[in-house]
Image (tube, rainbow, N blue to C red):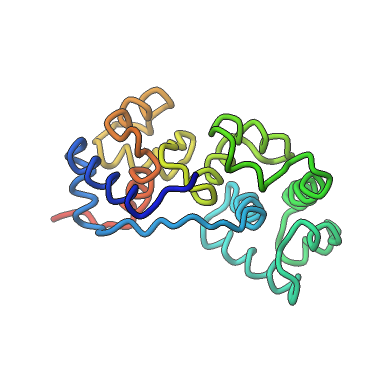
Length: 208
């Protein structure tokens, strides 16, 4: 079940009370603007596009892909009619084109049943999604956070989260998995909201 506005309010109160570092970030950023995108296939496709490239590059390729497929919306059915060569004209790499086509095929064939994912546990959702070529734990966690609206997801592999933790908590190096989870212990059960604020903290200018 997706989080509600009241859940977000409760999360912010909890985080302000439990983590003094994050309290300052929340005060500087303001209200949490995270809202789940319920267009599940689009969310997964966009996550695949965004793997291991900058946000600006991912947005550019996504816009080119939307233009290529117009007037059709990006969907499993529409993508399944594409070839890797056509996808390449939108800037999609051959490897990611294969991932997108594999996702489309598995959704159409029913190997991955997106409508039922909201009824599964976080771990079960991840197990379902990693059946698709190119979808690993990170992509599945992005889906949990930004599509299903799960409240307590900590994407410890994410470079942005690790960078934010290093900066906010004065670490010498990027934290490993164990350190990420130790820092996030006070965030539970609202790690998703804390992660959102951590990402946003990267946009803040250092205090004089």
